[in-house]
Amino acid sequence: MENSFSRELARSLAVMLLEMHAELEEFAFQMDRAPQVIPTGSTFAVESQAQA
Image (cartoon, rainbow, N blue to C red):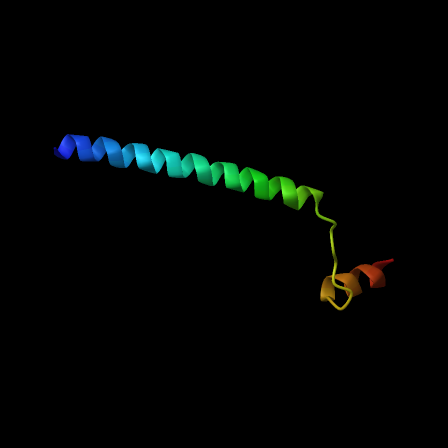
């Protein structure tokens, strides 16, 4: 009984990890396609303009 439970738990965890991996791949794909937005009031933008 305990061995069966362990196998079922391992299978369930493996499926969850595969699903999470697929979700992360989809998220990364969407982030790569999203337009990059740089806030104009940020310190980084001000420093970049000062160097130019």
